[in-house]
Image (tube, rainbow, N blue to C red):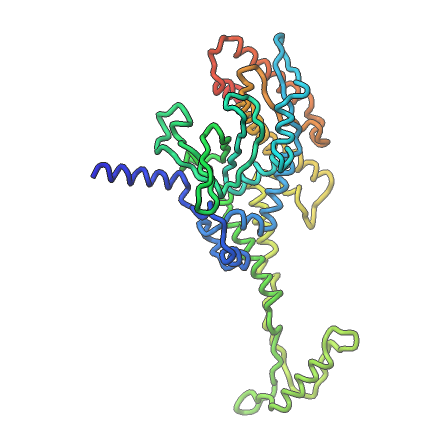
Length: 414
């Protein structure tokens, strides 16, 4: 009985580490895709979402994540080394920079960063395959972002009281549909993720917290689409004649005469009239509901701003009907870089420094945005930060290996 309970607990933890939403890892069937695109899915329930379909068919969400990726990828990779007497020097013709500029045959360095951003923003996880000729090589031969929906994590069922990643994660499964086509060790996968307090192994999609504004936008667009494409009759022409018993309906002959005359003589064409002239006593009753009273545009705009905030950008970077000027566009750009893009780039650069084992040698990678026009004023501050980093690494390394690479990273980040 104890063995059965232990097995159930392990299975429960395994399901938890996979996230419980197994459809995230499956390619939607054509039927599922048609349901999503037609608006028939339950958008109020994120458990029914196929994240990438939602991302690619929600224009505001696509615009925010795409813009974020372009801003992040606008940086230039640089490789620095601390000097013995203090300060920092850039390493020219660094093989690590060359690798990051051309990580694999399919994409260049900018697109690789954009993939990294999209995978984290949509799925909360990015799995980067590290190809090496020999395991001991410091420089990988290639880096490739795997499709998150094809990757699963096989864990040991333990995540605390462990000092090595290999004791927590046994391997990563790469699947083609339901078939496992490869098993990769933790050393072969550079897994970066959003913080997920409920699951220390796998990140949570940021879209989960935004499911209400996203579903509101999709519902508003769906409603507007129905009004425009399936609106039916705009109104009714009814008889206004009455007697003591009530309304007198039009005779079949009179109804046909009015219908024929309406179709023939009235409309928006060059030789058509816009006002009906008739001897019949008629009244018009509208069947359409004015969309402005539903405030659909205001709802979409408010939800759009919530998504922008959720991904750490500034609404000045996106098209606006009012209030858009060059000055506030530049201000929004600076805010986006300082509040989100540069901190995210620091995280990515530290990940590269760790991956290439540079910190132990007093070296580190940087994703530099000093060439961006709106950030030119920050060049002096950037140089001071680089020198502080280099001096900290050099001094700590001089202390005879007291600090591990993890300690160095923590001190630098602080």
